[in-house]
Length: 333
Image (cartoon, rainbow, N blue to C red; front, side, top):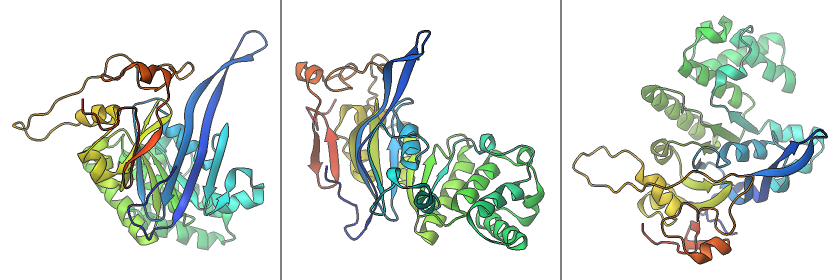
């Protein structure tokens, strides 16, 4: 698969080749494997230095599983993850630790990842204890610098997680993610649990950090408005499959896959005088343990025909930098 960068001078930071992740379904007295949940199917992707790539789709489409698989939090069923020209999933532990420092994750619920009995300063210090040789005083100063970097103050060092607001806790999560100067950060629904005004502040912080440290983001979200504001390119997933990829401007202006068209039609319109057609998909997301044959979207697609039920559509280049997988790519619903 060919992926073109929005800027031709950008270098490839991360590459996914045929990435799959299946979860076994066990049953019976002996707990034997009776099937698999096909969470991620054959993902091929390139992410460039300094880029923000959005990943969107319905709940259960495999967005978060893809992010966790990239970081090694989920073991791959098949495929390769290549980071800075190194295939990282087969590296030995010592070699892999070098890449762990450069690949971090910001979770949706930072409170769940914090010890409620541990002060924030001490929680952030653990990063430096595990990965550096800094002295106790140096670690404390480094944590204070981190807190200032994300808009918190030195006095927050001694506070517990429950003493912070949701937005402040997410800033702590960001501080922990950038502590070791990574080059790649996965934001897994990083602002979805926040109020709109707080979302804007956190997104502005993420953009500022990206410009300052040349970070690359994989931005997983269900909020298309946030993705349009924050990202350079967008990858659309459905039932573990990639169905469309393009620049934000091109994909939002000219979606070529029926599923993408349906997603974009659901975005609220600010103007009451602007007419917009809402595309309502019939039925529910199919069971990933028993996905449909052919195109995975054909059971809900309003333009599906017999070929869609039999053959998986090829990944085609619609135009430069814009790709889609559909037998009738470009057809408007």
